[in-house]
Image (tube, rainbow, N blue to C red; front, side):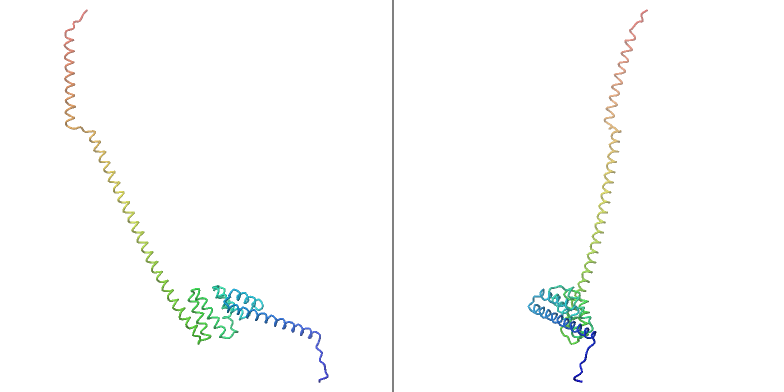
Length: 253
């Protein structure tokens, strides 16, 4: 047996060579991925979160399914207050059922923290509950859950208070509008009444003036009558005078 040499078929040898090359390439890629993650972690520990983010993104370019790359990228984004973007990477890790429960629990925990920062208290509570289902002994998650529930209650109380205040304000506005309308209506009625009185008074004054114009006082009437009597006497005198003159005229032939 030791003197027998095995010859691989040509095709098999070619395929084996390809597999070896691929394995070597994958190994190089894996090394580069891990190197980038380690470098990102160093920046993260130094609180250089922008540089950390850059290295984590590069690691995902090497391996887009890298769980450490996604999880750590979510952490670096969270530290930069990029909460909506961080959510996507935490959700990707938390929803991967092939991972260990502890890893998924941590992702749900951080996802809850992200929602908490955005004041999405209901979503935060759901994330913490999912984390506790996977890791019931996590006291940090239990504490955050209680805090999120308290904040949700305060938010709801505030919303109820704002709703009541808005309703009261709306009612006050309605009452004020009604009062303004009633006042306006009353003012219009008073103005109309005053206008009617003025018109009535003017009509009465016009009637009185017309009456005074058509009527004369007793004294004026006596004066007029006296004047007429005087005119009549003068006229009579003139007539008598004329008749006397006529009587003295003789007709000539």
